[in-house]
Amino acid sequence: MQGSEFKKNRLGLMGWLSGGRYGVERYAYTLHRLTGLAILAYFILHIFVTSARVLGEEAWNTVMGFLNSPAFKVGEFLVYLAFAYHALNGIRLVLTELGFFLGTPCQPVFPYSNSVKRQRPVLVVVMIVAAVVVLLGGVDFLRAFPGE
Image 1 (cartoon, rainbow, N blue to C red):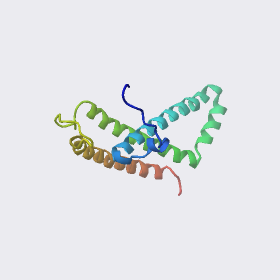
Image 2: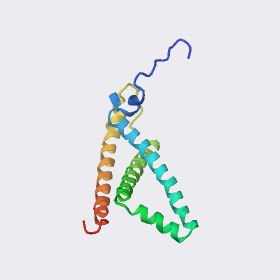
Image 3: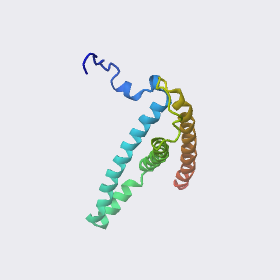
Image 4: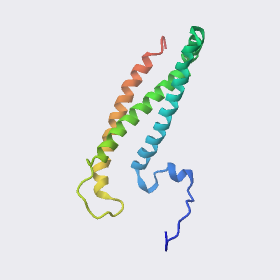
């Protein structure tokens, strides 16, 4: 870029993680990225676990016995939580990309109040729906622990 200088990013990783002046939308963006990476890690782990089936019944039973520990049950719930948030927020993002919740075109002046007034309520509704879905899954999760 001629005539302009690049400003050094002094915030580093915290600048990427913190919402700062961007508000709750930045946190939703960051959480969407992190849940996407967590789901990818789960899929890779799932491939390795199911590949134990080709090693025979004894190997499969060993792996399944290892995965029935309480720590992995909590991990399963965290994967469920990531799926619930990522799916619902993804639907919101698709609808936004299709032009819903954008409002009428106007002069783009930060903080883009027209967009914020239309998109933030949708984000709040998505978070409430995600919380309800997670609570319903949490009830089912608690039932999975026998005798506790």
